[in-house]
Length: 278
Ligand SMILES: [Zn+2]
Image: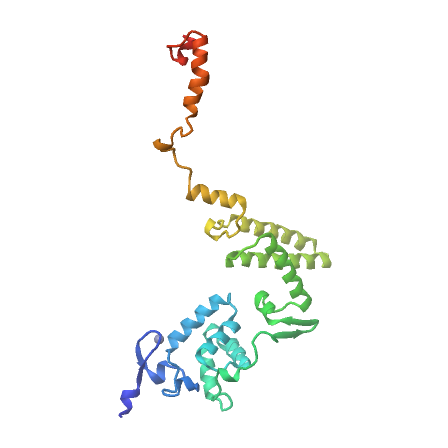
């Protein structure tokens, strides 16, 4: 077999025939033993990562770990961190190059990642231990007690404003951060800063109110009001059709036992009641 015939393989995801050495990352997985490469191309790896990133609300570490589990690749947290620091969002190529290029890593696959992720992902800060998740959520630079405070404030806000939308959650997060800043100003006696932040908090709360309300589809709370609204929109009360018109014969009974006898008493027997005022 000439070398040329094995130079291209078909990407299992996008279906394009692509150059094996240029377009596919190396793989030590037994699932890819035949080609020694991943079965999806570099671009498809990138798209998959971006999709996972959305699912994990922007948590890059969790998204990337999930990606590597899917691809049966080895997740090395230290290497991942150094690649992210160096290359920002375009770290994937660098990670694969290095994970496959170093002797102690190149034969590893996801089977070497046996610890359960996220259970022990706590990070030690000067004043205590905090979960990596909280640092990802609020960004670096706070103390452990501040991260806890932020999370408590965020929870209070989200109880009052339960929201599934990223945009709204982001505003709630901002409110928690502003609250913390306000507290700092108060402690340091920065009256000016305190006033500015109070104004900012009020504006941010207004932002929350001007966001378009979620449609009724998103309201899974079945309060009485919502159910009534649903019925009114979906099943409005129809006009009476002829066959049901006066089904109990109320009109005839009224006529027989009230209108007619009174007409007779008042000497209007053969006149319509409506004529009485004439
Ligand atoms: Zn592809």
